[in-house]
Amino acid sequence: MRHLFVACAVFLATAATTQQSAHAAQEATFVGDAGIGVIIEAVEDGGILIKEVLANSPAAIAGLLAGDYIHAIDGVATKSMTVAAATELIRGKDGTEVEITIRRGNAESHVKIIRQSVQSTD
Image (tube, rainbow, N blue to C red; front, side, top):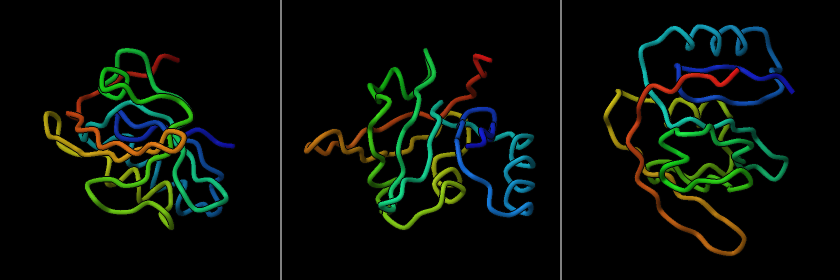
């Protein structure tokens, strides 16, 4: 797995299959967008899994946990979504809201999170 820092806020883990997609993700690091402070990865069954929630991030404050599955982002299902596409939907202007639908066990919930700049703990 390769960890990429995206848009000063969204961290993600993915196996970069092409140099072009890795380059695009690296370029996104320098964009002024904000995010929610999670490390995500695509899973084999076609979903997006939260691998880690950064301490004191908007996602942590909203109650997201490592192991939660992101079922939808602003109403867009993530079933066949790539990590890059999920990241694009999660990122946005600092101070704007994103609705994340998560699945934890058998329960599904909708969480509204305000995007902000999040610094890496590394």
